[in-house]
Amino acid sequence: MDFQSKKLINDPNDVVTEFIEGLVETYPGLQYLDGFPEVKVVLRADVSGAKYDKVAVISGGGSGHEPAHAGFVGEGMLTAAICGDIFASPPVDSILAGIRAVTGPLGCLLIVKNYTGDRLNFGLAAEQAKSEGYKVEMVIVGDDCALPPPRGIAGRRGLAGTILVHKVAGAAAACGLSLAEVAAEAKRASEMVGTMGVALSVCTLPGQVTPDRLGPGKMELGLGIHGEPGAAVADLQPVDIVVSHVLTQILSSETNYVPITRGSRVVVMINGLGATPLMELMIAAGKVVPRLQLEHGLAVERVYTGSFMTSLDMAGFSITVMNIEQTILNRLDAPTKAPNWPVGVDGSHPPAKIPVPLPPSHSKKNDETLCRPQQLSPEGHILEMAIEAAATAVINLKDSLNDWDSKVGDGDCGSTMFRGASAILEDMKKCYPLNDPAETVSEIGSSIRKVMGGTSGIIYDIFIKAAYAQLKANSQSGITALQWAGALEAAIAAVSKYGGAKEGYRTLLDALIPASSVVKEKLAAGEDPVEAFALSAEAAVAGAESTKNMQAQAGRSSYVSADILASVPDPGAMAAASWYKAAVLAVKNSYQAS
Image (tube, rainbow, N blue to C red; front, side, top):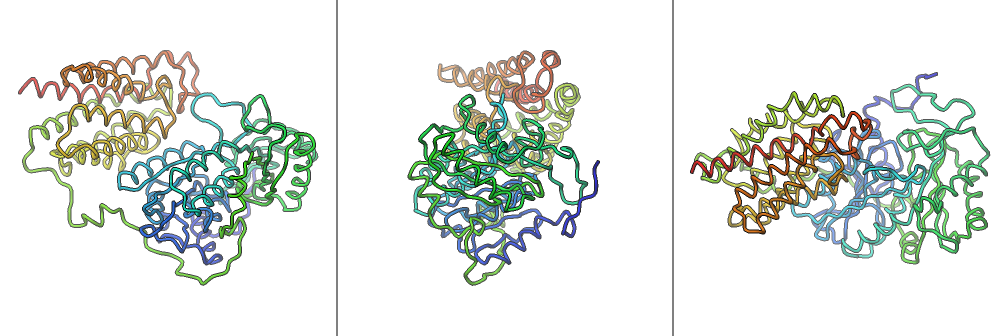
């Protein structure tokens, strides 16, 4: 039976911003950016991005996991934390604001839990920041040991072990190491850690009813920090038995999630999930250490017990085990002022909020606006025809895309792509600097960003950002066919990097990767550029059609039966092949006409 939850809050929509306000009032070493409600960023009060002489370490994600992540902002740990709404990945603009606020010449490291929304939003923000001149690296943490090795690209979930990675990276950055060195230590730490949780209840979102999914006398093993189902529901057992099961799962040689063998040195974190009394956490800690020592033959060097990464008011705990070497232990022992590691709260109280920084391009060009040239160059005219043809092809394919997507997805692929294509056509009439191909590509991204929501929108935004960065780096003397091919390759690589998909996963990349391979091969062989791209368009269409024979490993299609998938091509791949072929044919026709 469900019942209305009781919370000590005001408006449920304001819980995150009011939490941040209370946090910075409590700890004088913290500030937040004055961008509520869209921008919710907590940062160190002693750091100014332009002058900061160390690598900035930034993390974040959906709120509801407090003290993670804002409670770990402080010297020796995080430089900034980006807060999303409850259990929702923070928006790209908020992540960018955080990067701009604290990143100096040495760059920044983004530490991201392995959830699709976080990977995509932080990934797009990273590409945008790179295009603005910032040095950015990203480490993804997936330390969940509860579920069998996942199929496809989802990967292991990011859990409380992420906090230990924060500490290692923050201490490395505080020592003045380079971005590459800090990222390498964080990645190494992320590969050494495993976590599993046990819940006695699910969590209640502010303003919503409390579900009673587990029922009396039940517990759930491996429940996710957003309340997502775990590995199994079982009868409630004594903590001795629970601890034994969790440790056996984390250290399993069958899954081999964590490289720990008898004789290894480890640190342990017992993490409360939000509603577990400290007494119960300490009882668990008292059972964990001797079992690791006596049953598993491990040397336990440190034990961290408390609430580090919660799930609102969920009752239960997680156990994290990290294999350590002396360098990692030194980083964990290094001093920090992050308030929830924990630390003291001494120091004068600076202003609680500071202005949101503007992008460098905005401050340099505040009197300039991009606009359509009065006179198009021959190349600008061809670019216009290619863009118009591509967008029109997508618009004409709307109903077919929606029909395919209704069978293998949520039925809105055509509508989403239609909005993007329509915005491109409208904006091209007014503000695309068509004589500048690189900046025109950037403006296409702006058009998409305004109207295309969901995963498709952010994937195409990442695609465009990466293509723009590649073109911008090579656009001093005009864009050659080889450079267009390089931009396509870079865009594909970025989508694969942040989205996780590869060729054969039944996505838009199954159209674009064959196209990129063909055009690269033909240009290298000395083929006429127009013909090379025409052949690559045929490869794109063939690749999209071939998705009928693929088992989906990404997106909502991965939940659809193989029988249904066999009769329907991937809508995203078909859309990509459509606009790519239309653009190529428009260019070919233009050259033939001239």
